[in-house]
Length: 149
Image (cartoon, rainbow, N blue to C red):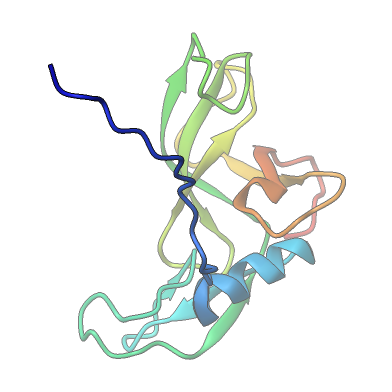
Protein backbone atom coordinates (compact mmCIF):
# COMPACT_ATOMS: atom_id res chain seq x y z
CA UNK A 1 0.00 0.00 0.00
CA UNK A 2 1.35 3.47 -0.96
CA UNK A 3 1.44 6.42 1.39
CA UNK A 4 -0.82 9.43 0.56
CA UNK A 5 1.23 12.62 0.26
CA UNK A 6 -0.32 15.92 1.42
CA UNK A 7 0.84 19.49 1.07
CA UNK A 8 -0.82 22.74 2.20
CA UNK A 9 -1.53 24.99 -0.79
CA UNK A 10 -3.27 28.32 -1.07
CA UNK A 11 -4.41 29.35 -4.53
CA UNK A 12 -4.00 33.08 -5.02
CA UNK A 13 -4.09 35.56 -7.84
CA UNK A 14 -1.27 38.04 -7.52
CA UNK A 15 -2.50 40.40 -10.19
CA UNK A 16 -5.27 42.92 -10.51
CA UNK A 17 -7.60 43.21 -13.45
CA UNK A 18 -8.36 46.51 -15.13
CA UNK A 19 -11.59 47.34 -16.92
CA UNK A 20 -9.58 49.28 -19.48
CA UNK A 21 -10.15 52.76 -20.86
CA UNK A 22 -13.53 52.11 -22.53
CA UNK A 23 -15.43 50.01 -19.98
CA UNK A 24 -13.66 51.92 -17.20
CA UNK A 25 -14.97 55.23 -18.56
CA UNK A 26 -18.48 53.76 -18.88
CA UNK A 27 -18.46 52.55 -15.26
CA UNK A 28 -16.94 55.80 -13.97
CA UNK A 29 -19.70 57.78 -15.68
CA UNK A 30 -22.36 55.46 -14.20
CA UNK A 31 -21.03 56.33 -10.76
CA UNK A 32 -21.76 59.97 -11.69
CA UNK A 33 -25.27 58.98 -12.88
CA UNK A 34 -24.36 59.60 -16.51
CA UNK A 35 -24.40 57.17 -19.42
CA UNK A 36 -21.88 57.28 -22.25
CA UNK A 37 -21.53 55.41 -25.49
CA UNK A 38 -18.94 55.35 -28.25
CA UNK A 39 -19.35 56.71 -31.77
CA UNK A 40 -18.66 54.22 -34.55
CA UNK A 41 -17.01 55.02 -37.86
CA UNK A 42 -20.45 55.29 -39.48
CA UNK A 43 -21.66 57.74 -36.82
CA UNK A 44 -23.77 55.27 -34.86
CA UNK A 45 -23.59 55.50 -31.07
CA UNK A 46 -23.13 52.23 -29.17
CA UNK A 47 -24.21 51.87 -25.54
CA UNK A 48 -22.46 50.40 -23.65
CA UNK A 49 -19.43 51.80 -25.49
CA UNK A 50 -17.34 49.49 -27.64
CA UNK A 51 -13.58 49.52 -27.94
CA UNK A 52 -13.59 48.59 -31.62
CA UNK A 53 -15.98 49.35 -34.47
CA UNK A 54 -17.98 46.18 -35.20
CA UNK A 55 -17.80 46.79 -38.97
CA UNK A 56 -14.33 48.25 -39.58
CA UNK A 57 -12.53 46.93 -36.46
CA UNK A 58 -10.88 50.33 -35.97
CA UNK A 59 -10.39 51.62 -32.43
CA UNK A 60 -13.24 53.82 -31.21
CA UNK A 61 -12.07 56.79 -29.17
CA UNK A 62 -14.99 59.25 -29.21
CA UNK A 63 -17.28 59.04 -26.19
CA UNK A 64 -20.81 60.44 -26.42
CA UNK A 65 -23.05 61.20 -23.45
CA UNK A 66 -26.57 59.87 -24.00
CA UNK A 67 -29.77 60.33 -22.04
CA UNK A 68 -31.03 58.13 -19.23
CA UNK A 69 -34.44 57.97 -20.91
CA UNK A 70 -35.18 55.81 -23.91
CA UNK A 71 -37.50 53.50 -25.80
CA UNK A 72 -38.13 49.78 -25.40
CA UNK A 73 -37.21 48.10 -28.70
CA UNK A 74 -37.98 44.53 -27.64
CA UNK A 75 -38.72 42.76 -24.36
CA UNK A 76 -39.36 39.47 -22.61
CA UNK A 77 -41.57 39.19 -19.54
CA UNK A 78 -40.27 37.25 -16.52
CA UNK A 79 -43.36 36.17 -14.60
CA UNK A 80 -41.54 33.89 -12.17
CA UNK A 81 -38.12 35.35 -11.34
CA UNK A 82 -35.39 32.92 -10.36
CA UNK A 83 -32.97 33.32 -7.50
CA UNK A 84 -30.30 34.61 -9.88
CA UNK A 85 -32.53 37.39 -11.24
CA UNK A 86 -32.14 40.95 -9.94
CA UNK A 87 -35.73 41.15 -8.62
CA UNK A 88 -38.03 38.82 -6.75
CA UNK A 89 -41.17 40.27 -8.38
CA UNK A 90 -42.09 39.95 -12.08
CA UNK A 91 -40.17 42.24 -14.43
CA UNK A 92 -39.02 42.41 -18.05
CA UNK A 93 -35.65 42.04 -19.72
CA UNK A 94 -35.63 44.61 -22.48
CA UNK A 95 -33.56 46.13 -25.22
CA UNK A 96 -33.66 49.86 -24.44
CA UNK A 97 -32.45 52.38 -27.02
CA UNK A 98 -31.43 55.40 -24.98
CA UNK A 99 -31.99 58.92 -26.26
CA UNK A 100 -28.91 59.78 -28.31
CA UNK A 101 -27.93 56.13 -28.88
CA UNK A 102 -28.45 54.11 -32.04
CA UNK A 103 -27.90 50.63 -30.64
CA UNK A 104 -30.03 49.38 -27.72
CA UNK A 105 -28.67 47.94 -24.49
CA UNK A 106 -30.11 45.09 -22.43
CA UNK A 107 -31.41 45.93 -18.97
CA UNK A 108 -34.28 45.17 -16.63
CA UNK A 109 -37.54 47.11 -16.76
CA UNK A 110 -39.65 47.34 -13.60
CA UNK A 111 -43.24 47.75 -14.73
CA UNK A 112 -46.56 45.96 -14.65
CA UNK A 113 -46.97 43.35 -17.36
CA UNK A 114 -49.90 45.26 -18.84
CA UNK A 115 -47.76 48.40 -19.17
CA UNK A 116 -45.01 46.70 -21.18
CA UNK A 117 -45.03 47.28 -24.91
CA UNK A 118 -42.57 47.83 -27.70
CA UNK A 119 -42.09 51.56 -28.13
CA UNK A 120 -42.84 52.46 -24.50
CA UNK A 121 -40.78 55.28 -23.04
CA UNK A 122 -38.69 54.44 -19.99
CA UNK A 123 -36.27 56.21 -17.67
CA UNK A 124 -33.41 54.95 -15.55
CA UNK A 125 -34.04 54.36 -11.86
CA UNK A 126 -30.66 54.98 -10.22
CA UNK A 127 -29.57 53.33 -7.00
CA UNK A 128 -29.16 55.61 -4.01
CA UNK A 129 -25.36 55.28 -3.88
CA UNK A 130 -23.79 54.50 -7.28
CA UNK A 131 -20.51 52.54 -7.15
CA UNK A 132 -19.51 52.26 -10.79
CA UNK A 133 -21.37 49.07 -11.76
CA UNK A 134 -24.04 48.41 -14.39
CA UNK A 135 -26.36 47.79 -11.43
CA UNK A 136 -26.08 51.52 -10.59
CA UNK A 137 -29.05 51.63 -12.94
CA UNK A 138 -31.33 49.58 -10.70
CA UNK A 139 -33.72 49.18 -13.60
CA UNK A 140 -35.65 51.21 -16.12
CA UNK A 141 -39.23 52.17 -15.33
CA UNK A 142 -42.06 53.77 -17.31
CA UNK A 143 -41.30 57.41 -18.03
CA UNK A 144 -43.26 59.81 -15.87
CA UNK A 145 -45.44 62.40 -17.57
CA UNK A 146 -43.59 65.56 -18.40
CA UNK A 147 -40.20 63.94 -17.80
CA UNK A 148 -37.40 65.69 -19.59
CA UNK A 149 -35.33 63.41 -21.81
